[in-house]
Length: 435
Image (cartoon, rainbow, N blue to C red; front, side):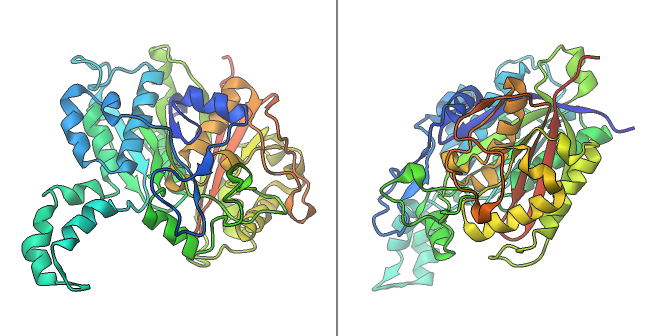
């Protein structure tokens, strides 16, 4: 019999706050984290806005003995480490990061973290390449002889996607099943789903899972510009730029952040009298193989992921109280996602509270675990986040949206991702009932 799995810790770092509590307060207050780009000069880009996380010092989120290792952490790794620290502290679990006598069984504590393509630090790389320049060309012989020596021998370890999970497991001393998933925006939800399955099977008692990524860098931004995915007409009004499922949607905004859960076997959580946010009751995944750059307009595969998750949860579509959809604010993607949602939810789609949050955060890509965190926090607080810029739903579709957060009964919530490249995932969460 499959074991029951619950969420006992939530960690968030996002453009609207560091820490899950600050994130939730600002999300429900309608704070927008999409602003004029500040971390580098975006003057030469058609889109000059982004969702950047507030300033932080990574040394504040790791043990003193580990601070030297932060020198080989790319931004994406830092985001995962910060979110993990928040999740652990929230859970009440004492890992090696906080004590010499951990309260966890490290062999039974897994780690599944979704990641994206980590962009190299261009200043760091350019400085090394300059030493191997021959006129306007790069001399590969000189690069091998002199250029590479300008980089630290551990340089590559800053940019491998699996290093998010590596640093988190080393900091906290976790030795259970570990994996990294790199499937674009769906990475975090797929990682949560895998950790869910691992605990269900009894291969672990706990797992930290979710995802983190930063596309707030020149390479991340230019890729999205070339794919025509970002808003370019709202540089002077960034708070109104991302308009999920709205008739005036013109594109998304690059962003950065991370969302991680502590998942735990229900019996284990009860034995230690842990705070339980919600139970994970359904997971579904699919791949449409339609196109690398264009969504399948039918949304068939996305609908399959949603339907699988609902079926496992044994929850009819009309019993879902809140949906946190992907909602990029790209018209073609929003229409495809709506097609999948209509297929899975039918007429119930018009009544479920609908809260696309990327108007406030921007597109966190592999960091979309923040969306899942919003779905779980909604159960905990019995409140639906706002749909800030969804004013005139696209194609006249009827959606249950509000520009203000709403106090409402949320017994079942759902978070889903419809990613570029056709990888899809959906998670269903249920409020714990007194037994």
